[in-house]
Amino acid sequence: MTTQEAVLHPAAIVEELKRNGFTHVVWLPDSETNFMYQLLTSEPSLDLVPVCREGETMAIAAGLWVGGKKPVVLIQNTGIFESGDSIRGLGLDVNQPLVMLVGYRGWSRHGITNDSAARFIEHILHAWGITYYLIETDDDADRISNALEEAERTRKPVAVLVGTEFGA
Amino acid sequence: MIPAIEASRAISFHRKDAIVVSTSSACRDWNMVSERRNLDVDLTDCMDRAPAVGLGLALAQPERKVLVLDCDATLRTDLGGLATVGETNPHNMVHFVFDDANHLSTDGLPIRGLDNLNLMSLAEGAGYSKRYEFDNLEELFIGLEEVMVQEGPVFVLVKVFRDADEPPFPERSMAESWGLVRQTLISDSRGDVASSYLR
Image (tube, rainbow over all chains, first blue to last red; front, side):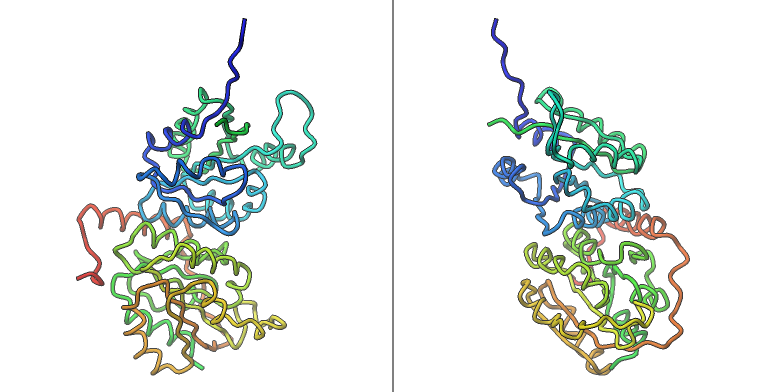
């Protein structure tokens, strides 16, 4: 018997973003999300907004949301740590229903991780009372819809942890 | 040097239906003079994020002007924000920075070496298409006529001073302020209200 490796393709995420009517992807370009870049830039329904530092993503997303748009943030878990005060002040305190796609650097379901970014991220989200969903394969991509539904219902940021390297 | 509250009044006079994002001491002043509070996004928290919030609004509402009322002390805490604005290049954004001689946004505490920072050069290097500097009220009042019709992003440095007794922050919460602006913009877009700058 052979098993096919289950992977997450960028197209599955982009399709989910389109299906939910997201308008802008606010992100910090980095090596982990580089794979999505080509797809995102060729998708006319999504505008890319690159930032210099992750904390800005929350503020730009807040401005987009006040202006009537539906942004999604795309950063790494390390960026969540950097964004802490902005998530508090410009996400939680202003009732922004924001979906945050978060690269789960260091994630492993097969053993101990030595990466402190992976060890701390879920604890940090718990501390802020932010719900999160984990996606690892194409079959999980619809959890972005769950996250959006929850964000809009609770009027709070919700995280989607991307616990994988992207497949080609 | 210009009394900060008078600089805010001058901006208010030229504002028309622009969205205004104000922060720190600039937010205190703006709260006293604004006549369109349903289009005012107050930052009484996360005060360094005014340019980023303004950028998001400018992208969401390309038909309207977005004015950011920032302070030197808040801008210095997130200078990278200048680069993000320059890279994104919002044509409808005007970024005012009040250079405060009294340092009231830091409760009178001077920031050592802040005068070494050349904000005009930084804005130019970051890619702001036009830069202006004013230290005289009459020139500001007249100059704003030109500022408001420029293709952005525009950077405006205003040399101000403040009385020791600062006006209070707005009583409404940020959530109330932001919710009201969002509601206004959404209902305006449904009514297809075009910006007076485009008429």
